[in-house]
Length: 70
Image 1 (cartoon, rainbow, N blue to C red):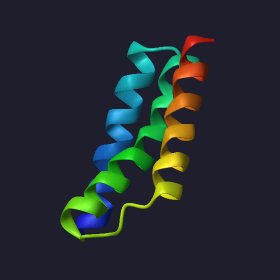
Image 2: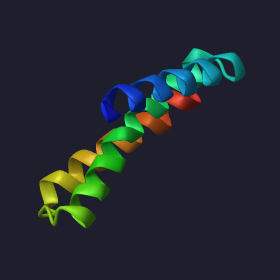
Image 3: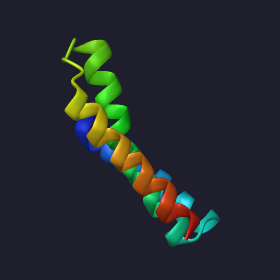
Image 4: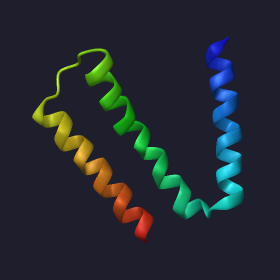
């Protein structure tokens, strides 16, 4: 049930963002979910932080930066 509530709240936030920002600006920030999941898994679940994971995360962040400037 909490998953449905979270999905509903996320959709409300997404609709609010679409009224305030252009899609080309707002959509790249959806990629920040990867950063949040990485950090939460490292802190809360004691997942290993490897060089490959950090390199992949860096590429995602660089892609977000490049696409949001375009």
